[in-house]
Amino acid sequence: MDQIQKTLLEEIADLHEVPAGAYNIRANGEMAGRNTTANIDIVTKEDKQGIDIIIKSGTKNESVHIPVVLSQSGIEEMVYNDFHIGDDCDVTIVAGCGIHNGGDKKSQHDGIHSFFIGKNSKVKYVEKHYGQGDGSGERIMNPQTIIEIGEDSYMEMETVQIKGVDSTDRITKARLADRASVKVIEKLVTHGKQYARTYFEVEMDGEDSSANVISRAVARDESYQIFLAKMNGNNKCAGHSECDAIIMDNAKISAIPEITANNLDAQLIHEAAIGKIAGEQIVKLMTLGLTEAEAEEQIVNGFLK
Image 1 (cartoon, rainbow, N blue to C red):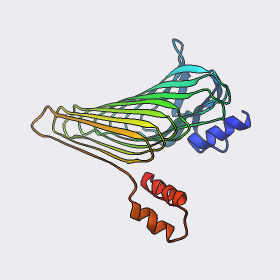
Image 2 (cartoon, rainbow, N blue to C red):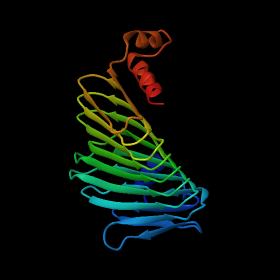
Image 3 (tube, rainbow, N blue to C red):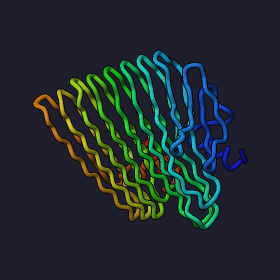
């Protein structure tokens, strides 16, 4: 891999060298490296672009890295990755996409990640998106995550986009069985004329299932963000969605909640807040020696932690 691709890997997956455990690295539309373990197999799909990640029941304290990098202008691809996670597992999955576009053609990566999680398992999924390059071509990413969580299982998803993505349509859908739970944490920053749409949809079908969706967003310059959160309580369950956003310059942000209780014992809550940085916060930091721009950056960084 060249230095640009290595830099992208550091940004999206914190990889400074070949990772331990199972991994599949995709670069410019082709596999750039793969490793499997006794408990985790990775198989190339035969009918379309993508892979099947098969994690055996009982697998614990193992990880899978499946980053994607694009460093050539003009590449457009659609990838399907399916995760089959057995019962009684405890695993971490690190994905993400980095695009370097130094040309005038559009570079685009669309990916559909489907999770089929067995019973009594715990999954942590980390997905980061990052763009760079001084070309005039757009950097576009459209990730979809489809999740089916089995009985007594838990999934935590951390999704981050902090720089350089011109347009993104981010879709996450989850369906929960009895006593299953999901937690989603989104961190999103847009600037320039960037556009970002986030859509969460959770079906709490199982008894005593639960969902917690948290979004932290910052919109700068003339960028535009839309946040939509839809929760359906179809059984005795608990659901909570929360959107907190900072708006700056001439940006626009929309937060659109939808909660539906289809069962007497469904307890659903939505919270949303959009506002600018308080002037007194900036003044206080400036008295400590920071410039106005540095003060704003400190506040934004603290907000996104």
